[in-house]
Image (cartoon, rainbow, N blue to C red; front, side):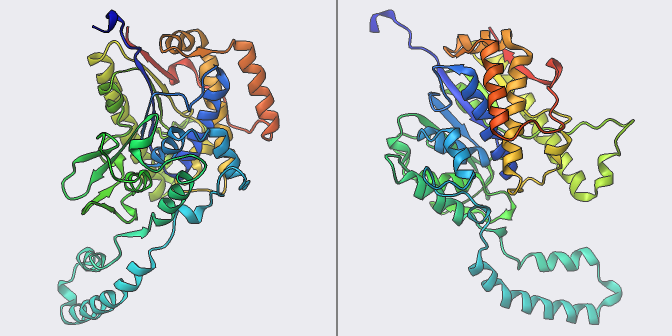
Amino acid sequence: MGGGRQRPARRALVLAGGGIVGGLYEVGALLALDSVCEGFSTCDFDLYVGSSAGAFVAALLANRVSAERLRVALESDQRTLPRLSVSRFMSLPWRSYLGTAPRLAAALRRLVGDLWAHWDEAFVLDTAASLLRVLPRGIFSLDGLERYVRSVLTQAGRTNDFRRLRRRLLVPATALDSGAIRVFGSRLDERTPISRAVAASAAVPILFEPVTVDGVQYVDATVTKTAHARLAVERGAGLVVVVNPMRPLLRDPKTQPPLADGGPFAVAGQALRIAIHRRLHDGLARHAYTSPATDFVLLEPYERDLRLFDYPLMTYSLRHEVIRRGYRTTVKTILGDYERYAEVFGRGRVTLLPRREIERRAHRWSRASGGQGQGSRAPSQAHTAVQSAR
């Protein structure tokens, strides 16, 4: 039927989460992809899957807002997009705080009375837990992010409606009360606005309040899976490009102090990166085994990039440096195994520019963006991942 002609396999871009720094790193990686491909940009993929911070970037790409326009918006140029500022991501839920005040005061009175009457029986952790129950659901609200995405997608021919997109966009989120994964955009009659889905996917527990959609509270998509690459495989993608901005940091024990010396937050951050990274690699290995006709390209930071991993996940002030590091690392990754990448991308109907032209463009971009920074050594072949299953 159909003349026996087989429809070309889809090309999918999967963007994982990683806080504000992760989203900034992805912008740099996407700029790099745009600079190494011939006649193809990151706005030309057939399918986008975005989780957490990646959902924000994916929603703009699906509306043909290029990585370069995102970069310009970050430079405070409002002619292309409204300026991106940290206040848009991390607005305080004043209504929640005001509602908490009387409950917290009452809880403190009860707590003081209990401690006075039963001091010898009181447990510090139990006492602290009683206060946690009356605190707000999150430190910050994502209302500002939702308003920003909505304003950007309701102007200049863009759309905030999944049903009107020319490219398929999938945004997963985790239902808090059941642990189920909801994939916004998976149904042809999806009525949830893209901006609301992005907020739900990015609601990092404790940091942000859960986001309610159709009476269900949702938290960050990364709670259940790192990148949700399965969604692209299930929809017939032949080439799946995964950008993952989070990976464990490797230190040289001979020249560098242990990570634990950085305190509890350094320990927690490294533990989170280990869990997220291991889960992603295990999942991609399963997909490569069960879907041998699909090529996977995994792009990640250099594992010894001390400066990048030194930035807190929600840092915004160093955005220009993070974007530059995302660009440089991605270009060096591709140049480090150019022939293999050219073959894999070629099977997905994406042509890489000649090596010399990529080097020329990278040099010109680096000069225009402020030159080379320190600590951006090229990752070795063993530290990059191109998984091609044919």
